[in-house]
Length: 410
Image: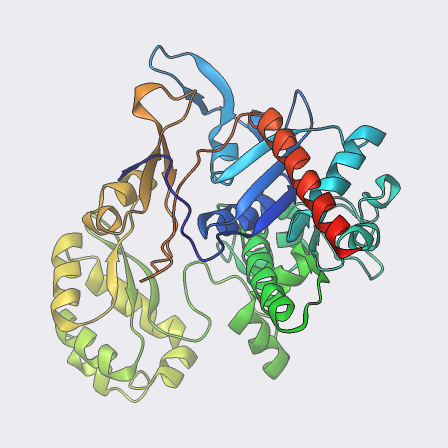
């Protein structure tokens, strides 16, 4: 799907976001708001910009193969934004942020706790400028608690929050998830919290401060694993690709590759056993119910694995589909973007970019499909300070209008 600049008709059209975040959690949040139609002003350090701009290779290239400073990592979370390069540590820069805050609905920041207060840019100071401001702070451990002062990184959050202890091979070392999922999920929680705060603002006229921690959100999305412990008191061990509550639900090896098989209930297990020609397993009281399969996992899985190993991968997947049993191949990322389903759902998009030449820049699409207020991809990830002059000129106009409005209310 090829896209370029277009009109903003999203659900958040008319909402302006002051984005003081960088790296991944905050930018993920603000990109999502931008996809929904908000005008996102990304504040960057002059000359260097967001740290992730240099987190490569790979970097964006033009038609001649010239490499830009735009890394793929930076590109993944910064579309639908305008970049304003300003030094917030200077008196002039802080003053610009204060002025912008008067004309923005939302502020998102991920500085260390207290890091913006010394520049007068914390919530307490900015709400004096704009009482209706929704101010979202993202940090490693939150604004309170004994660890509030510590920095936050995705790897540390995954370790502290427990997900690494249940991820990986049972006989291997604890393993992080293959993407910065603690950052990404924190960004998602931040976006939903901001939308809820906007609803509260609509009803009451009150802005508010949102305090989000990477570790808190990491703990929240332990979901069933966390609740399993809270109910049973038993700590979950690493199960590799197996499921703590469902059997069989894991990766198996065929004679020419790997498949995933997710047997979600007893009826599916009965049909699965029929495919394998092992109806005796479904009638065996040791395996007939999920509770018993869970209890006797160590005995059952080797039996199933031996049967599955005799199948060709695609033949087994076809048989599973015919029987209505969830299962499939394990795609590489290259495979993912070549599937007809991903193409049909526009999960790869292409946007014109000044440093990408005629081919534009390809990005991962937004998964949300609205029937009315459609997601739009209006702007490519900006170069550092690309919109500085335009935004500062707009700010002057906003200030003039605000002054005239103030005069009329005297």
